[in-house]
Length: 76
Image 1 (cartoon, rainbow, N blue to C red):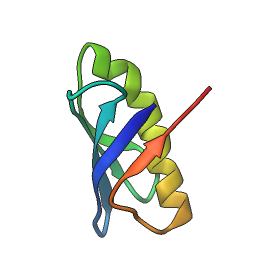
Image 2 (cartoon, rainbow, N blue to C red; image 1 turned 180 degrees about the horizontal axis):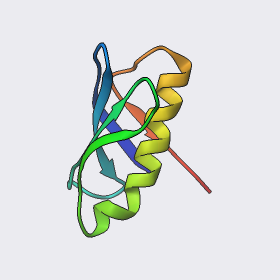
Image 3 (tube, rainbow, N blue to C red; image 1 turned 135 degrees about the horizontal axis):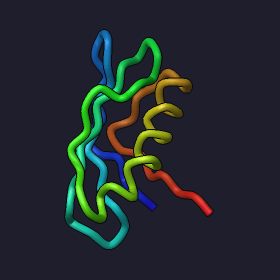
Image 4 (tube, one colour; image 1 turned 45 degrees about the vertical axis):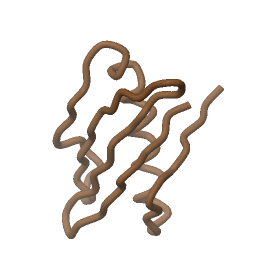
């Protein structure tokens, strides 16, 4: 599980911070809206393993069109 927080959508990109379950550590992701390609990320160590889930969560938000302030991303 990873939480996307401080999600903000701008004209050409969307950005968010992501926090893994049971952690206070934060990663950052910025993605272009046009092609859903990541533009910038800031992560290392444990954060790197949660990056893909954060990226997929942002893609889903783009597809839905409505941008929440936070999003909980879960997988099995």
